[in-house]
Image (cartoon, rainbow, N blue to C red):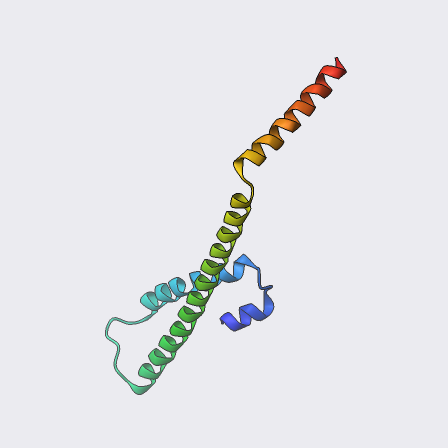
Length: 112
């Protein structure tokens, strides 16, 4: 299911992630509403249960991969922000702001 969604959706689509995360919840709800309380342990029922477990495990691994990529991207963005904020010392920023304020003040005074 996740592969089919990836093929038809762009990689940066938030709908893909939302559907992959919401899917196991929906499956769990459907399983509770459809399964009888006293199920016999026939071979076909066990096979279907194993197939469902395998599918759920595959979806879980995809969700974990998505979460891992999101964590890496967040860490990358944080590192970039740190570099940008640390590379501009406060004194330089303050001096630039004061120069601009003085320029604006002089332009306003001349306009009067």
